[in-house]
Each structure stands twice: as structure tokens, then as C-alpha cells.
Image (tube, rainbow, N blue to C red; front, side):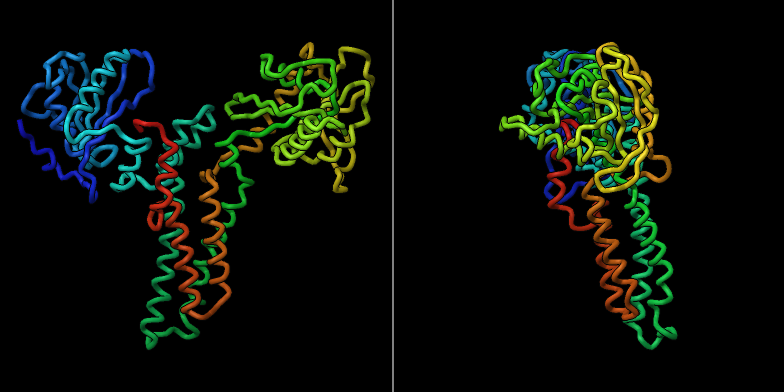
Length: 469
């Protein structure tokens, strides 16, 4: 049986003649499993599995038994769908097999496919990479797919869906097109000097360049919200030994994540708990008690706690009610506007009046007004108010209303370089110098979307995907 499956006009890049396959649904026992094939042999392979000479109608599901072509053993009854390239996810001919999700069924189908000539198991991210290389999406959309697969909260899902749908790529392509237009005018002025406008063309296009530059800088000044949403909002718990930090972590995590002991210095390393707070990803970090110690290990724990606190999005400084209103000097040094003070163990004794707001100075001398909450990490007193306040702070820190934000460091670095080039180009009236800076800015934007000079990035980007996507 010979079938010409390349008559569909599927675009095959140079050197890409193999057909890939993989389990695209999750591993493990399930009701349904999805096995995907992509490449020039996808259609012929489907015909072989179905034992028929013609392909089913494209984009229509059929339910039929599938057999091993070599042994004619019945492997399963499956739903099969054939997508003709380029109208498919990868831009190639694609077959999806929806089989039962038992391990033996999946292994039987995969072993059968592996035995066929011209087929091989897909590399991690290879389906999405082929989609990119066949012009089905840009790199930002491909990265959005990776983020959607990894999304653990509703907010992460919403951000990933927007990026996957092309919002970020459209924004960057708009800047690129406007810069290309300005560059074309300047290069035309260089190539045809007899048509010079009075004063040259650079001042004429400077308004457009300034507009793009301003939009780019506003996009960069987002307090890294998109990146923080991908990685999780970092909350670090600080305080003196035995202030109740580990008990607080356990209470918020609703499990015994940290060892609680009356012995000072029990926590020596950082303990992280990840959870969903109001649809946003949060990483809560318990740290070593802040104090001077002759113990080398505890001293290292304090150093790590201090370093992590300096990079945190929010700090919870826990103070024992018996010490209030005195704040440990080491903790006080880390207090800034992103700090909440917690007076703990109020169930033990009458703490007296605890103000809702603490007024004082940061280590840098800035005047601060910080919220103060009386709590009991042991009984749960004050936890509801604390969670409400934390949810408000997290939403404020990760709010992504408006244009889709930056989500990756590589985007930020490329845009920072592009902004620097535009800034330099705006400072000159010499057409040749301005043109070169605009060209470099365009190139940096192209690196983000995958239009230029990204071959060395592809293995890194798609290597983070799971197999089958």
C-alpha cells in the first residue's frame, strides 16, 4: 500500500523528512490517552493502523479498531482524527489517536509506531518547535504554551492564555513594523540624497521613534509583574528565634511543613511552601531566627535568610508578644514598605494595646507606616485577617490588568538593549548613525519573537517542554 501524503502541500523544512510520535496526554492510568503523529508519514501510518487504502476525511473523527500492521493484532478501538497540513498545529500532516488510557494499550501502540520505518519518538517540545519553524506561531506564543502547561493557578493560566493567543507577539510586532517603516524612510534618504527634505529625514521620523521608545520603556517599567506571576509571589517570614515563625508557616500551609521546637535555632535552612492564594501563586519561606551565633551552620542559615528577605516581594516580621513593641535589630534592618508586622502568641498573655499601624523608620531612614496584626500561630487567632491582607498585597503586586506584561528575563534583556539603541538613535541627526541604531533595535525585538538570530536559543526554549507537546 503506497499513499502519497505529501500532495497536501505540507511545508517540510530542509532536512525534516522524519515523522515524529509521542504520547501527548499525561502519563499514567487514565480513561483516554492521546497519541499524536506529525510529519510526511502520518497519513500513511494511520491507513496502516486502520487497515484501509484511503485516508479518512480531514478534521473528522472516526471510531474504528486499530491493528498492528505486522501481526494484525488488534491493539484497541480508538478515535482517529487526520489533520492535513498546513492546517494543523505543527503545520504538517498530523494524526491524533484517542485510545484507552491503560498502560498496556499505550505501550502497545507506541511500540507499533516505533517499529515502522521513518517514524521516531518526538523530542521534548518538538511539536511546538515544528509549529514555530513552520510559521504557525512566534516564539512568545510558543513560550505561552509552555507556561500554560506549567500553570498552577488561575492567574498564571490567564496570563499564559493571553501570551499563547499572541497578545505579546502582536505588541512587539507592532513596534517592529513601526521601526522598520522609520528605518525605510531614513535609508531611502541615504540612498537618494537628491530627494532630501529640508533638514534631513531624521527629524521627521523622530516623533514616531520617540513614541515607540516611550511605549517600550513603559512596558519595561512593570515592576516585573509578569515574571513574578510565572515564578510565584515570594513571601519571607522573619524574626528572632522562637518568635513563632515555623508555627506560622505550618498554620498557613495547613500542614507540618516545618519542625516546631522550644529550642532556639531549630530552623537553620529555608523551608518553602507553595500554595494558591486567591488564584495567585505564592511561595512562603520560613527562615532561620535572626541572631548572632557561634554555630557555623546557624550563622549560614541567618545569612541565607537575610539574602532571601532582601529579594522578597513581601516580608512578614514576627515579634513575640512578650517583646512587643521592641523589634529585633536584625529584623528591623530588613523592614521596608513591603513589610507586615505580626505580634504573635497573643493567646499566651495579655499583650495590651496593639496598634493597627506601626510608625517608624527603615534602616535607610525612610519614614514608614506598616500594618500590624495580633495573631496566634498556635490557635489560629488573627489568621483570617492575615490571609485577607496577604491576598490584597499579592493581587496588588501581581495585577496584570491592561497590556500583557513581560514574562521572561530574555524578553526584558532584549527590550532593554533595544531601548538603549533607540535612545542613542534619537540623540543624532546623522542619518547613517540613526539608521544603524534603529536596525539594531529592530534586531533585538526580532530575537524575542523569533524573526532573527534565534537558532542558538531554540534548544533551550523547547528543551523545557514535556515530550508530546
